[in-house]
Length: 496
Ligand code: ADP
Image 1 (cartoon, rainbow, N blue to C red):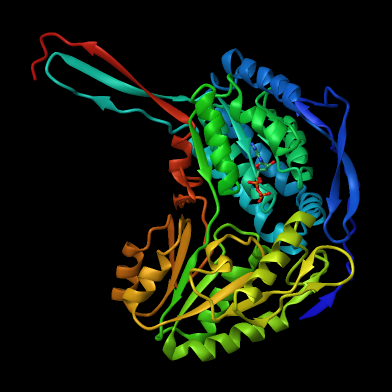
Image 2: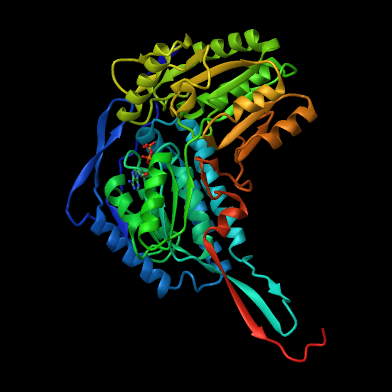
């Protein structure tokens, strides 16, 4: 494991730090701010307005008015799509500045933000922009004497509560289908990573999206987030984050106006590697599946099951890869892994590692923090683990892999399903029969065969079991922001 700390990229001045309500950047009602932190150093980047319940109220009022009386849900889907396309263009024009915000605020690799996260945001906007004028109901023939049709109407004001690991992807994964449907939004970015969301608010105004349609309220979960989930005037909440918080959001939604929620929650995803796999390819897939974005990815292949015939060889390759990983400044193009996003998370990961050692797992590599400041952790691999250990049961959300050996396909399926989570999974094999059987047997929302983290905006994505319900991406996500209304009339003297 090397470490590296040089960077030639200049961090741009931070332009937007207030709340964005009804088309304007405003201070919070209390006038309070909070520090937003650079995880490379633990130092303050800037102060950001601190939104609370009353700021959420103002934002909801604006979104409600824009929905009930404004042009957005009433204009043609084509017109909405045009503004969304314009927003996608503006995002691409500002890619360097936005990538720097996610890198300095989230510890994410600058080059990957530039090459992946931000282009994917633009692609997501364009995908749903293209769908905005293709929202159709169906005609129902029904029984003799009745005819009907369905209208698909925007669900209304959407509350979007998002996490800190993919600030840009998450923002548009929720906002793009909601906007295409004709909804208006109040977005609460994670308190750790508000900066790019505020930049997107600014760009939405330049793109011509009317005031009140897209509001951003920075703030903490227990205050601003809780106010969104309990709000009587919000018609739907979409959330990505931990299972623990997902339960709270669902309870608050149920206790208030029974708004529907979609929840994309934690995971402890299994990757099954069979004896016939190409070892180099398997090691690449498994390594990236786990350590991409410093392990802060809900689909991370955190439980890797390897068939006994190739186990030793694969372990060796994975350890080599971990040792060759350069941990350091995310602006440095030679660096492979940046700092964890915040101190709380950094400490939690290190405590899981200690837990693993105490439980009797063998630490093959890593296990320590890197450097004297900032939240850097070595890529860490444990073996001699089983499904009863905390490190194999709970989501760590950091660069920690559990490696296990299996003999038969039946055993692997059983152990892969031995979890309360069901977000993602992977299989590496050349045997089509094995791939087909395993993919139908695993209870998870995604099965990647001979690949991992292969996301596409056209492919619906979400969980089984305590990984939540509802789907992001794909046309399934658009449906979550639409209601179906059935319109029925009697029909007389129909010839059939
Ligand atoms: P993590 O534990 O990984 O930080 P969380 O699930 O706590 O992830 O956070 C995801 C998002 O949920 C953040 O925007 C956070 O502010 C928000 N959040 C946290 N607690 C609550 C809550 N009680 N109600 C609503 N939102 C919350």
